[in-house]
Structures are given as structure tokens and as C-alpha cells.
Image (tube, rainbow, N blue to C red; front, side, top):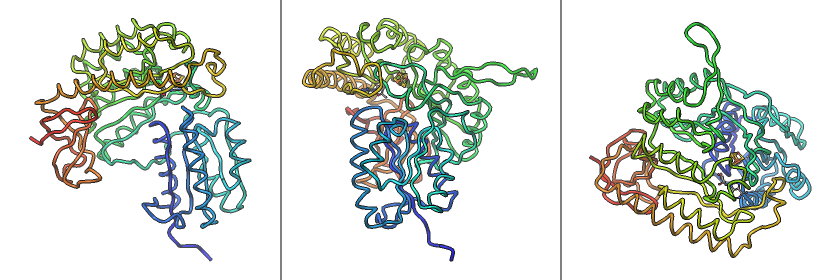
Length: 451
Ligand code: 5AD
Ligand code: SF4
């Protein structure tokens, strides 16, 4: 007898926007298979629970194993539920071994390179009710045309390239996401045109290092020509309906003058750049294999500010990388004071198995790391507050994202520079770009009034 009962899925996503986008694809595939998202339902109604994992730092690993432990209880109450785990952690053999030995109730393990196979894997599990572990070491070409269920109707994540060839010595990503692969430019443009036709106003172009995007296109005479990331921005800037272009992440060593110029030329390219610096010390940058110096980085910032004086700059900083001395750390504080970041993600260095820095002998003691971390955050927060206060009185264009969870009259959105603005509004504004006069700049957001 056919089972006509509605089927539900839940997906928990850990980690970066690449993972978020992979989860959107998993949701898209599940909805095509007839599943609906489990919104606040009891665990016993879930037919498939997926955890999409991140391995960039140790606390992401810990969170994953904690969640998996909790799923055991859900599975005991709902034995038919399929438990699937995927994403970056599964690309590491020692993690798969742990899942196999300590969490035997997991039904399906797959990796970052075979997401497109997920419907087939799920169908096999359901028909044969056996465990499947299928992790590919590296991917073939990028698979086009996968469905995707967007979190917001008016903004979308768009992959432009995957993988990373940089091998920063602290980082696990080159091992979990494989080598760099760029999508064909025409495929990206087709996707963005379709998104625009579907009402999307803002696109976030995604890649571990978008600046090394290498595509091809066909010129007016029918010849295949090479294109780069800046060319892609110029082309997307011409797509009607798209009003904002953002990208994430760009490596300072590959940030070209051509891309900086695109900020000057392309009106839709938002005046914000996320430019991870990681450290201000030349010694540490060298040991991290970042391939730029503090001065190289400061020169880029100077060029960016010259082209777009109002540009907001955000960054990632790692504190306590092996061998970091007080002098090295002071170089980081000095750089932060010179760049004056709009905001920053700060991380305590976390040893990742299999990376070169794992075997560096001079690991920094935890208490030293924490002390430096707190000093850095104090400096950054002070600068962020000053920068946000400088917005007071300015009229900003804000893309409205939704209402606050605690107050349905307070709405929230983002400025072009990606700052969060809260204001009194109504639900008709969601998805629209409206003018908001900033009344107050706080450390983590702005408060404004509609004009
Ligand atoms: N320890 C701490 N932070 C890390 N990051 C990447 N690997 C590590 C690690 N082993 C940070 C970097 C990167 C961000 C996504 O995560 O700052 O830019
Ligand atoms: Fe990791 Fe460096 Fe690649 Fe970024 S550029 S993903 S930090 S290896």
C-alpha cells in the first residue's frame, strides 16, 4: 500500500555560507522528492534529519557530536527516522571512523563532493534499510542545475567557485573542499538572470577565494575567451532586477586592481568588502602561508578607500597562531588601528588534524591566547562603535529582511555596507529597499527611522 502521509525533513547547518548554500540545495532536492520542511514539529514527525557539518575549528566538531548525541534519543522515539550527516567533517577519515564506531544509529554519511547524489542515496536507504557511507575524495566537474530552496525570496547565495588551492597552514578547507573549480560564466549569468526574474534583488557570490575565479565566455566574434571575477561582476551589474551584488570571500594576495576598479564602476557592487587578514605580523603571515605582508595589505586598504571612500571593511583574525609573540600580536593591534575595521570575526587558533600547523612545536598557551583575544575584541568593538556612531544622521538604503523575533513592529534590514539597521516598520516593506535615517549607532547595529 502506498504511503500518502506527508513527509518531513529537518536540516541543521553548521559553518559558513558555502554550507548554507549546500543545505539550500539539499532542501531543494528533498522538496522535489515530496518532503516538506519540519517547522517546529515534534521530533517524532521527522522522516529525515540531516546535519551539515563544518570542520574549520574544534568547537564546530564538538557541536556536531553534541547534536548527534541528542539525535539518538529522537531516533529511539522514532525508529523510522533517517539520520544523515554530511559536509566538511565527513571528508576526514578519522571523523567517519568515529561516527561509525560511536554513533551506529547514523544511517547515511556523505561528503562535500557528492551532494548531487543525495536523492539516490536516500532512495537506496529507504528501499534497502541499510547503512550507507559514501564519501568521495575529490569531486568531478561542478554539477549544474541542482534545485535550491532559498532562505529569503529576495536575496540569494550563488556559488561561483568551490575548493581552495591556498593551503594556509592552519586551515582544513583545502582538504575538505578539494581543489579550486570555477563554474562556467554563462551558467552563473543564467542562474542570476533566473533569480532576478524570480524577484531576487541581492546576490551573494560565493567561493573560498572568489578572486581566483577563472571562467570562459564567448566574445562577439564567437571565440572562447578567459574571464576573471571582475568580468563576472561587470556582467552581473548589467542584469536588470538585480540591485545589490556582494561576494565572499576574497584573499588579499589575489585582490586585483581590476576588481578594486569594479567598485568604482559598478553601481550595484555594495560598498563592503570582507578581506580576511588573519594577522598583522609579517612572521606569522609567512608561517601561515598567506603570501602577503602587513604593508601589502595596508596598500590594498588604501586603494580600496581611495576608490570608494565610504567602503566598509570587515575581516577575520586568528589569535594565538603557533609562535605568535607579544610583538607579533602588537602588530595585529597596530594593523587593526590603521585599517579601522567596521567589524571583525575573531578566532582563537584551533589545531586542525592533518594541517601543517598541527605539528608546529611552539603552540601558544591557552591563557595567553585568551588574554590576547580579549584585548583584540576590546579594540575592535571600540572602533566598530565609533564607525557606527559616524552613521548617525545619514540616510541609508536598507534592504528589509523581516521583523524582529521579539517585537513584530520592529523590522530589520541591511545597509549597502552590510550593517544591520533596526527600525519601526511594517511587513509590506520586507524584500524592499527603503530609505532609513540613522538615529543611533550602537556596537552591533544601527537604529533608524523610515523617511
Ligand atoms: N583556527 C582558528 N581559526 C581558523 N580559521 C580557519 N582555520 C582556523 C583554525 N584552525 C578562521 C580563519 C578563516 C575563518 C573562516 O576561520 O580566520 O578566515
Ligand atoms: Fe583556508 Fe586559506 Fe583557503 Fe581561506 S584561503 S579556505 S583560510 S586555505
